[in-house]
Length: 519
Image 1: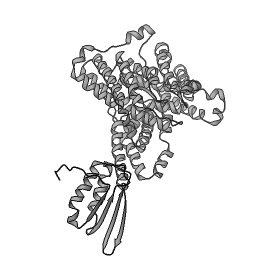
Image 2: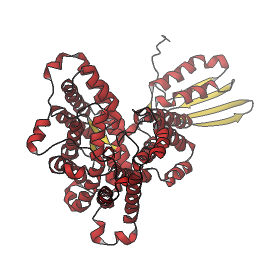
Image 3: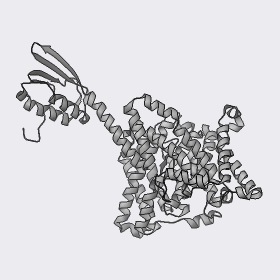
Image 4: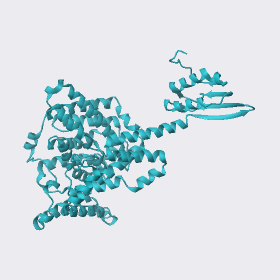
């Protein structure tokens, strides 16, 4: 689908944007709270991600906003600089660095993440969403809705929190969660989807409206079942445009000479860029139309978004996988869905705070449970297993690593495993090896492949080391268009010592190199 047909999908995008908004609202608030920043700063980042970054980005389905993966950096940054206004300056500079990285074409790094690792990341996010939403589903979690880290701020971890929740659950939250989940599952059944009017209405919206109605019923008729206010959506007090403007914060430009601002800015720029590149790569895999996001343009878009966010009091933003996955699962077709979610965030802050404070977190947890299940379906594990160990091991190790650490650490561990298998694959195929017996002598023909890179050095060097003594060897580079210097040096070094093993060596179309040891 091309961008010129953007407005042909308004109905689906409006519906998906509404679902993303319902998910994004508590995430924006929770992440800003966990970051030690003003509550409103997370909403600013979410609004800019929707209204600005969606149009600048080349991605059709990714959604940008404050990221859970940056909470520790933001919290430490505000503490180190001693003032939120100084921190905003670091966000502005980080955005400028991202724009520069985009022009330097650093986005190409996003293409080097192995497919098995990206699929592992998606499956891990799905598992974490399921595990993390269970306590909210039961009405017994005080951590913010979008917390993805294994170790939590309350001293518990992903698994111990579930045990704690079952010992402290609220019946009202459980009823609301189960009813919400049932409605969304029912809404996807064919007999509902065949009704055109119902198909356009997102099941998540119906679930949330029913959840609000149920809790109002509990408050009026069954007070013992009423959900505690701490497990409802919390919003800052904004009564209109005037009070909204009064909430805006601005960078402290006098901190421009503080070196710690630049250290923090570079840290934010690198981590936010990596998280964005990982997210858009993952969303491209979820995209039914298999569109590819231009990664350099993505860095520029994220950079402009962060500059604007910092200039008016917002925390850093990235492309985020949870909201983007919710967008895909809700049927989003174009960047209009992300834009609509930004509009809904802005309108909610201006006019709907009273209504939104009635929404139980258990209903939103049910929405995320559905997103999580679709990301980590059993069929995905079965498919990866069938592809062989070189695909399955990086996939499953990435899942385990993310589950027990955090997103970036887990991806790094999965990447190491993935690169190992890439190196192993390259080790196997840099040449064609043919051995011919001629009396007591062996004639060996080593024909190099078209492209021989530094990744093939180990394979070539080990093969040469294990050539039999008293043999005749031809190394043929006539079919090669590129032979890496490291490989050429290994061949030339072997040529120097081949006579010591009675090996008669012939080189065909192998360029000579100047050895660093002077030979």
